[in-house]
Length: 350
Image 1 (cartoon, helix red, strand yellow):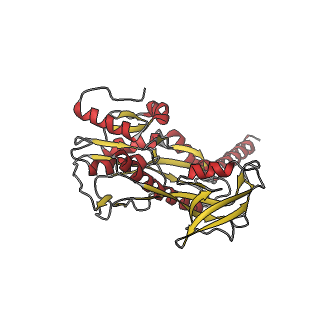
Image 2 (cartoon, rainbow, N blue to C red):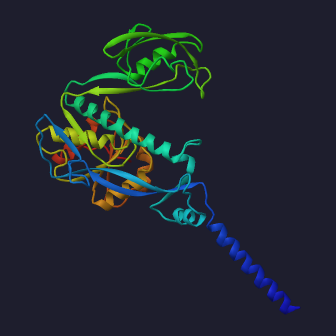
Image 3 (cartoon, rainbow, N blue to C red):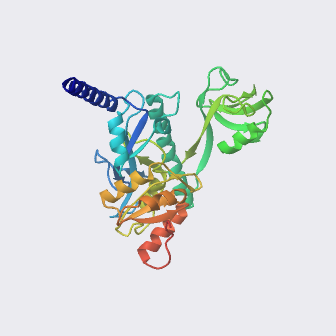
């Protein structure tokens, strides 16, 4: 009997181990976020090109660093990580394991997410240029462009991508927020008249509004609008396949630094993150812990931190990295100038 029990126990133990092994290799709906590469906006990209290149305007050199930071990930639809990898990530202080929908919204493929990240990067580059030039009091004009038209919506067949929206119900507009607010004053089903510039001629188009999918009381016509800026000289930002909007602040700082005498960095290794709006407001980002780790590993001693990320950043700050609280582009410039002079108080994350 004892021999039979021993055999049964051995078989059961082996079966449990096999099941545990198989279970650990099963894919799970989580994504592992890790520190990614950092790039100096004052330097060159992997192809040896200026990362931020300005043509048609005098530029000034700076030997320091203004690095933007990134996060890499493992997992996602079609390439999910296994349970063992997720558990290992949970035990690693440098890795954040988050639910898949945090990175990949439901009903969106990895290709769609990648395309959206590319669009956000492109838009952030334009916005960064606008914010930098406005900070330097260099005139920048804007226009609203129809980026896409949703099939089956009122605008389908009446408006086209590339149309410039110049008025809503007779009111001239040059900002997306203003156009959206004017359209939003209508009730679902009410008509709205938009004036667009197409082929050099203005056209008036009346559309019946319909309900938004996510908000039944919000009227929409089925177009995606974007603001485009007209700059007095050429700025080219080359970052390869990096996506997302979180490098906006660092792009703006690089443009300001290149267009003004002296050094914003004072020769220091500055890194940072944050979205940027056309009027210079700095917004929060995701993956702050991984970005700080990446910055410190690269050699940064100062990290420009969006104010809304400060509480999380303080908890995970790597040794040797000074966190500078940043709310606006102007504030970031003042903080760097204060660091360089050694006089005055620099806003920090507490």
